[in-house]
Image 1 (tube, rainbow, N blue to C red):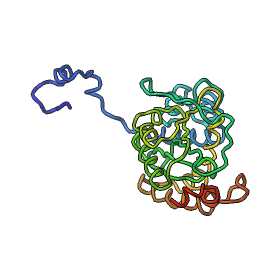
Image 2 (cartoon, helix red, strand yellow):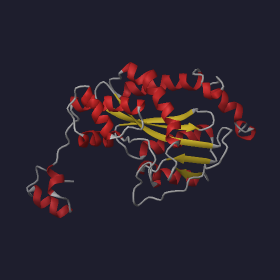
Image 3 (spheres, rainbow, N blue to C red):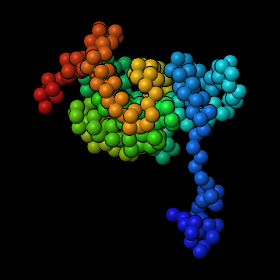
Image 4 (cartoon, helix red, strand yellow):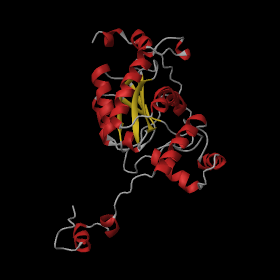
Length: 276
């Protein structure tokens, strides 16, 4: 928008464009190696103690020899898109201009494939840098239907994962998410509405629903990401492609009576959908 080589000074260009001068002169600063290390430790602590907030995480980091303040920890947690799992009015802050939908799963017995799907986002550390992972999961079978990686927390990669899941596995009756701005955006909810899918969002008193998908993130990170220390998003994408193939087809779950997600998904899929 602005041109540093133009004869008009940047101050004049910013005024004509309606931009603040600070945004014109700002240059993005890469995340330091020290902060990347802190973010990796915060991620591990959050998986182990998901009920810890910035104060508890700060205390643990200080015990490990890192002189870091609570505000800095809170800033890094916000950058990572994580927060403590505990009872609170809202599990995630929606965009003020986005519609928030009611929670539809209260008292619902979820017993079959494509009855309820869910989606969530997590932070992934790499050897150099970090990225974000979104996954669409069938609630009853735990099968991961689609996933995407991104280096920003925008809505487009979430919508892409949703489109892939719908294209490959048909449509669920209900789709449940938290109230994060990626999931309340028109780019995401518009796709759901166009397919006639009922939209459900975690609301007051539903913080425990996040524990369900946290099991997937724990498996992904401890069984793959932390062990591999991927160098780039490309390497992470290839590694996760192999891991999710294993997760769906080979990894047996005690909560599924020692069955794999793929086994249970196809066994409980209504016949008319399986034949489609």
